[in-house]
Length: 393
Image 1 (cartoon, one colour):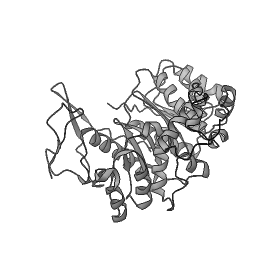
Image 2 (tube, helix red, strand yellow):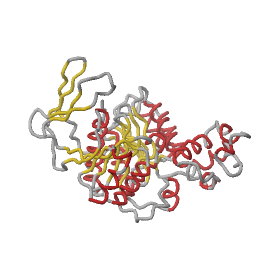
Image 3 (tube, one colour):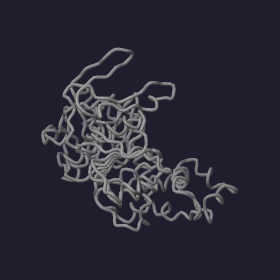
Image 4 (cartoon, helix red, strand yellow):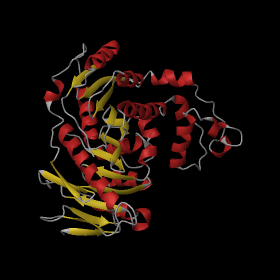
């Protein structure tokens, strides 16, 4: 198959629309559903991300994409009891395989952003992973293969219309890529930089020069995630998964704040008081996500006011005070942070430190590098200058 007609482009008024190959066959098969233009943009970008994560770490990887940027990305490390609970997978009857754990982590880190996502899996989609996917609001999935049982589960989703794409894992695109903007064709070499290159950790200007193996792995995950995130972008990673991604901001400090706030929310969801919230049994997962997000924000009275809390809880919870939240967030440690370009000022490090960042990988090369290094030294943060910029547009 050389081409595939689509219903429409980014918007319903943008017709005609198709994907096609100028040479050779399309490396994908649509096994179910009818994916659209944005679905394929998400699918092909997210597939590249998980393929690189698998190659770099040797672990199964998954990504949750929305509007051509990842809402989450992770490798398949086991879930502890707390993560299984906050990711809503602690009641699943089948054992979670490594690829299922990767998906649960990718989807669970920022569940509000992942709502209605497109999923990418580096490995064969099995029954456990398909079972998790079927429970969530999602547009589709791309993977190199599916077991027969998993495919049957996915084909039953969304009344049989769920988008399931299979991609040839051996496909390699041409080294030169093209795109059109306003009728003008742009051409560039593909970004083939290897982000698991040990040389990325050779230029360490900070006093603390120690990166644990886990920190190196997490920084590699952050950098590969950033490679497929709309710039400017910053990514916080802990224990093999992105916990906060700031995408598409014009100012780097806004990226760092946005991603840091998401990382804080991920951590606050693990607060004992949040874990013990007495939800009504008829509250759906998506509504629980929204309620938790409001509960841990400064707008908590929107769900705790008399006449409101009864809609969500069996009894009225006590709010988390600002001081309690600050104390809990301070307990988050060993977070790794990647940036797709240099930090222009130390304010990014100040904000990152508040969310437990102890390891940083960034391009370096700012005229204020000395200030950035000084701020890292102030907190004992280990930082490497990779010399690699990862803008993605």
